[in-house]
Image (cartoon, rainbow, N blue to C red):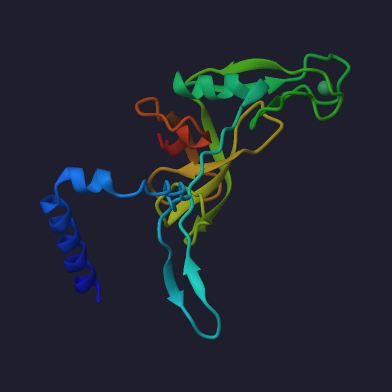
Length: 196
Ligand SMILES: [Zn+2]
């Protein structure tokens, strides 16, 4: 069927070429063809028709995300520094450092100040999980070791991942940074075994 259609079109085109221009002009002015709305999308693929029609409808979108007051944390990662926030209020019940950073103190709501942890940042694995099936949007190859690391001076036990090796509770690890081709996400810092 498709082939026939193409042939017909070719024939029509050939006829038009043969016809002298004058004859066309002599004809009554044709009413202008109304401008039609065109489909500019991608034709969907039918995945199944039974018991109901299911189509594959590819979508893509760019999510614009601001780091806001937490921007210094990501700026630090690009420079190979781990930065934490601290409550400047002396009367606050929590004056240790926070990673992930907080823009405001969860205890007294003061605006936090920034502290850079001196390199090398050494921590101890508090606990770990092997991630075999990562959720959509996790941009790490699986399986990987998700580790919670105790860092001296912190009020928190931040989650990250072990770049290589097998973790155990109490293992000493060192923070490293993806300063070359950074992802500009929290994945730009990770841990490596640091046994002496
Ligand atoms: Zn506070």
